[in-house]
Amino acid sequence: MVQYPMTAKGADALRKELEQLMNVLRPEIVAAIAEAREHGDLKENAEYHAAREQQGFCEGRIQDVEAKLSNAQIIDVSKLTNNGKVIFGTTVTIVNVETDEEVTYKIVGDDESNIKLNLISVNSPIARGLIGKMLDDEITIKTPGGAIEYEIINVQYVV
Image (cartoon, rainbow, N blue to C red; front, top):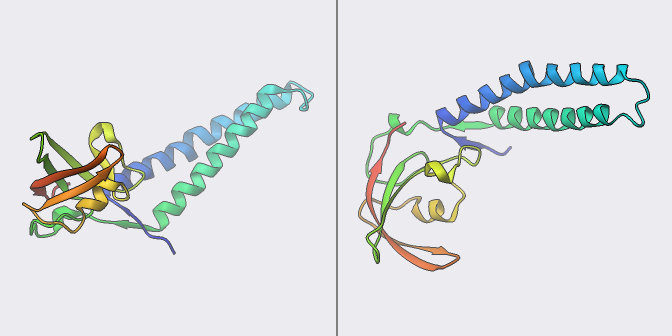
């Protein structure tokens, strides 16, 4: 059984998405299919085929979200003692040793990641390079542009 690590916030977001899919989108699609059926010949009915396709995507996403929630490993780092170690769920500030450019990332599950919000997947190259390291450690992250050296200057265990 595959475990899906996620923060409590990420699990809540998935639950809300599941509720939206099941209680709002699914009934809308069923209504659209029923309306399209009333238009007659289904072979040449584009509305019917589009609604059925949308239904397939919706049902697939429902199954995906249900599977992830049933196998979720919810990790709340705010309940752990901050010993300066980078683990799943921590917020980490790193500084580029060469350019002094600082960036802060929160390490989250795959479904929660959003680089625009500095939420990086635990499976991303940066997160993999950070996990297990300690405050003040210097690390080298391999990027498409080459290896970059960073220093970990802050590790927070916050929600």
